[in-house]
Length: 117
Length: 117
Image (tube, rainbow over all chains, first blue to last red; front, side, top):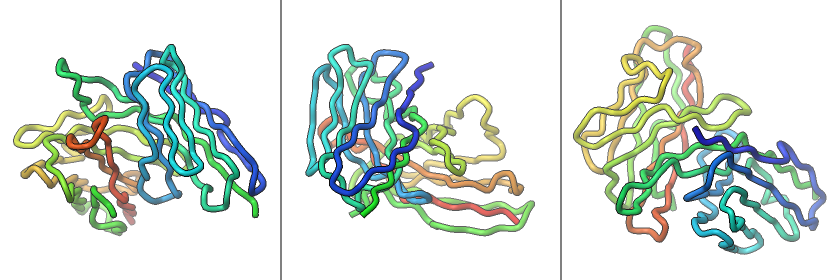
């Protein structure tokens, strides 16, 4: 089975600082999702990466998937208190013959981000 | 706005009773939905795959007779926790894949807190 390891498990930064969260897979990633969660609430979709070397950005958040497709990173530039929360990476557990995702994800353990004003 | 919605967001029930949680895809049809469980300060654990018009597929270790899943329409899946016990208290969250989005984006509901007293 596929396992995802996130690091660090928790992170405390001062507002305005940059930070990076890593997600490493035991197997090749065919679809890697990043979500943000406030404790006890739903998951907010951030980005999805599929191709080796792919990079996507939204506002101050950039996610990358390495060429070997076994590691992904999430980088936040000039962090703000609104960025605080739990960041989860999720790996797609498979695609059908037509290339369509089954939609089933396995998750890393999450990274708790605290941003001090 | 939310594309996957859950109801109720919080429910308290007595031990021995059953409780139903609904998961709806709001803007798209989902032939498959997924149910996860999240323990405090832990990541999401996939419980089962809900298949429209057929039986759900349960992950290893998940009791299918306790966690009944029904996917009667293309926009609604329900999870019924039968004969609930305090150890069933948890955060339950569903997801669905939107086939119309680039990369088959997987969206999550807001989650449902179940407390069994």
